[in-house]
Image (cartoon, rainbow, N blue to C red; front, side, top):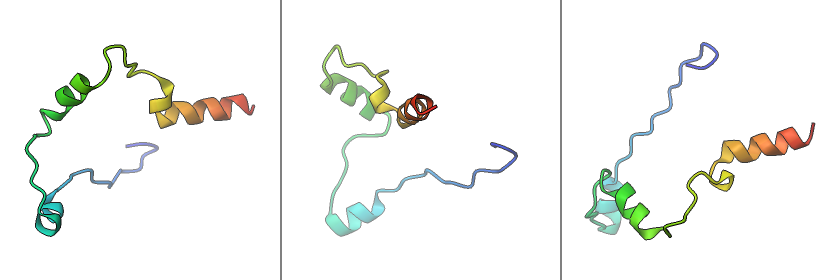
Length: 66
């Protein structure tokens, strides 16, 4: 909870509609995807770069304006 307000957002995902309409069948699991992505990025890929974090970009924009 933030500011005593409950967050009702739901981040559960289903691929059922993609399977039914497009006929797509996924082979990987949610558990296997991070490892596969990591294997495909360059060894020196910087996961901590601010450009990949919207909140950091906005914090920089707003801090520069003041």
